[in-house]
Image 1 (tube, protein in one colour):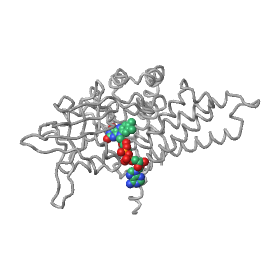
Image 2 (cartoon, helix red, strand yellow; image 1 turned 120 degrees about the vertical axis):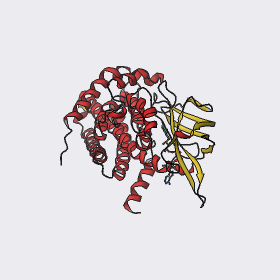
Image 3 (cartoon, helix red, strand yellow; image 1 turned 180 degrees about the vertical axis):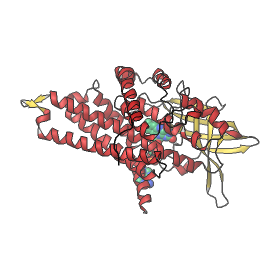
Image 4 (spheres, protein in one colour; image 1 turned 45 degrees about the vertical axis):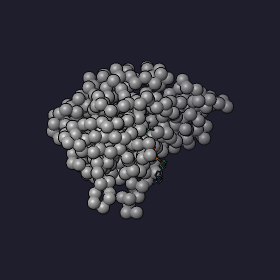
Length: 382
Ligand SMILES: Cc1cc2nc3c(=O)[nH]c(=O)nc-3n(C[C@H](O)[C@H](O)[C@H](O)COP(=O)(O)OP(=O)(O)OC[C@H]3O[C@@H](n4cnc5c(N)ncnc54)[C@H](O)[C@@H]3O)c2cc1C
C-alpha cells in the first residue's frame, strides 16, 4: 500500500492551493455577501486547464484522474465552498454523462467546450415532487417526427443560469414498457431552445455564489440526436454519474473539515481564557483531537473511493460511504469550529461562519445521508 500522492498530484495540489490563496481568498467574503457568481474565476481556471480533470485529452480535458480531482478539490474547498461546489458539479455530474454515454458527435459538440472551460455543465435530475425518489420524475420526452418534445420542471439545478451555462443534461420519462414501467432517457437540452425557461436563483442558507435555479420546459423541441446514449437507459446513466459526484462532494467536505481544523487550532492557540490559551484547556484539546481524527477518516475514505475508480475497480459502495461520512463529519466540524471561536465564530466576518452555513447542504445534495445509507445497505445485501 502507498498512501503518498504522486508527483503530478502534488503539483496540481500546489497549483490549486496558490490559485485559491491569490484568486479566491481575498474576494470570498465579498462574493458571499453579494451572491455574485464570479465568472472570471472560472475563466482563469480554464486557462490553467482545471475544467476537464476527468476528461481525456482528445476531448480537451487534462485526464488527471479522480485522485487528482480530490487533491485539487480539497485546496479550493478549504478556501471557498461555493466555488468548489460549482466546479465539482461541472467536473463530474455536469460533464461525465457526455463522456460516458455520448456519441462521438455529441462529445465534439458539447463535451469539448465543457472540458476546455468555455462552457459550464449542469445536471437536471431533481423535480419539485421527486428528489430522493428520482424514479418519480414527471418530465416527459415524446418522439414527434425527427425531434423529442420535452415538458416538465426541474428544480435546484446548479450551474444553470450563469454566463457560461450552455444548457443541461436532463432525465425525462420517454415511454412505458408493456408491463407499465416507466422508461427513462437522458437528453442534452441547450438553453437557447424555444420553451426553455430559467428561473431566478434560489436564496440559500449557504453556497451563496452557486447558481442554482428552477428550469421549466414547455414544449421544448430538440432534434433526435440530442438523446444521450440509448433510449430507456437514462436512469442507469444518471445513477452511475452520481457515484462520481459523491466522491467530489466528499472532497468538498474534506476541504471543509481541514479548514475548520486549521482555523480552530490557530484560534485556540492565540485566544486566552482563564490565564492560558484555549488550546491548553482539555475540553478544547479533545474537540481538536476529534476533528483531526474525523478529518483523517474522511481523507482515507475519499481517497480510497477515488483510487478505486482510477484503477477501474467497483467504487459505488465506497463513494456512498465517503459521501456519508465526509458530509456528516463536515457538519460536526463546522459546528465545533464555531463553538471554539465563541462569539467571534458567530460574527459573519470570520470564515468559520461561512463554513457553518455551507456545511449542511453536503448531507443533502447528490443524495441525502439517508439515501447513502440505503445504497450502502443494499450493497450489504439488505
Ligand atoms: C443547493 C442545491 C443544489 C442542488 N443541485 C442539484 C443539481 O445540480 N441537480 C439536481 O438534479 N439536483 C440538485 N439538487 C437537489 C438535491 O439533489 C435534492 O435536494 C436531494 O437529492 C434531496 O431531494 P429532495 O430535496 O426532494 O428531498 P426529499 O427526497 O423529499 O427528502 C426529504 C427527506 O426525506 C428523506 N427521505 C426520502 N426518502 C427516504 C427513504 N426512502 N428513507 C429514509 N429517508 C428518506 C431524505 O433523506 C430527506 O431527509 C440541489 C439541491 C440544493 C439544495
